[in-house]
Image (tube, rainbow, N blue to C red; front, side, top):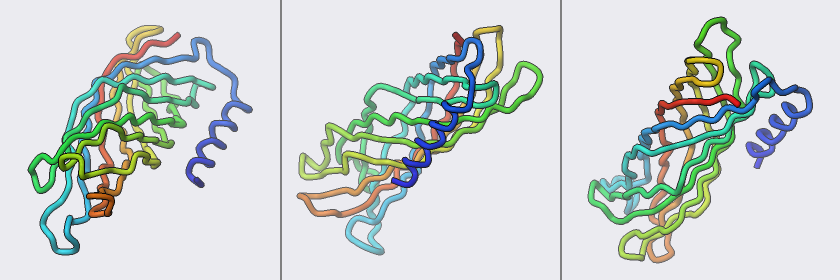
Length: 201
């Protein structure tokens, strides 16, 4: 809750003390590769070899940014529900879907020229649904809150269009259950590497 309060407070401060730019909205559409960290507790206790992992995936992602000033922005990252395979020691044990919206406060470096680097920090909320593990006997926590970090580059093409490269690290974690009993904890914590186009309006 402290992380959520800090993020809300930062966005409130930006809204109170910043004035919008001309064409303050920036819409981006990216192709993003999700690469999970795939760290989990061994199933069966310490020393057991079996670990739960989540599949890599390339997805379509879009985000809306609002530029309060030339240097400060807020970015909301969205996508449609994503389906992932879950594996136990390399063997598929089922699937689940998740929706992981992320809200970031972003600082854009004031450099001359067509390239604008930026960094961001914020909060991710992941909702997991349609969990189908171990023939219905397995389960996951349905909600995950965690910090998110971001770095990227916007390459200006003209007044409105830009090309974007973006990297994010997001904390997504869940306990794993079998017939109601907790058997492991999965730290998905994916690295997201994306590229796409942006449009200012």
